[in-house]
Length: 80
Image (cartoon, rainbow, N blue to C red):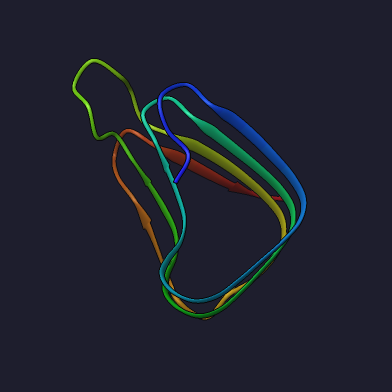
């Protein structure tokens, strides 16, 4: 979980057997170069949790995941 104005940059991330792979919330940013997510119901969840913050942003360059992507109206996901 990445939250409250955090910027997280990953060159290579592997997640296996989780309910949520990557959760990004409350004006935080995830910049993932290679993301490999397996046996996970929700690949990416972007949302605004706390009222005093805004949504989240994720930039994904190379992602492998068969689960869902949940993005609320306050958040943005960009595939490159």
